Amino acid sequence: MSVFGDGLEAAVQKAFTRPAPKSAGAQMRYLVKQLKGTKAVAQLLRISQRTVERYVKNQIKKPRPDLAARLESEVKKRWQPQIRAKAREKAATTGGIIIDTRARLGYTAPIGSTDQDRIRHLTVALPPRYAARLFDAQEQGAGDDRLREIAAEALKEVYFQDGGRRAGQLEEVRFTDIQHLDFDL
Image (cartoon, rainbow, N blue to C red; front, side):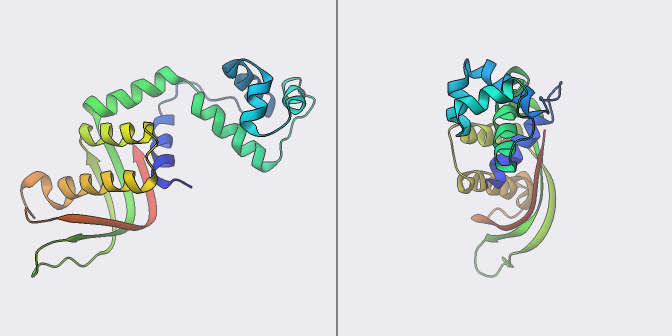
């Protein structure tokens, strides 16, 4: 499970103007239309082409839980691409992104400072350049570790250093033991 990737995806999905299809048949019909055929959908979902056809015709209505989760995930990935792009663009250029997290945060600093990491609950508005970096990294297929590094760097600058007004000697922020992570645009 990708904590950061899923969190960014959920933030973008809040911008949807219409709800995604709910029933298995409607979801399957949407994917068939998007991928232009039942064979491509069958390969994507790792089921038979005949099974896809039966969902499209509403001959099967209730998928197994694992298939239901894959189906919903694939539909949401493709739902309202223009709205998704606009939300990302706005966050990356003007709006920024809000990170709400409860995690163990600490930092590396010169000897003599208190760099003890501890569980903190932070809600911090990150500037648009960090939203852009997070979305760009996600689009390029970066894993959770890379997204965590970018978020830690953003928290270092915005929260710990307060935009350069304090903690100038701070070298690195550690962002571990994530209990809660949520993004908002």
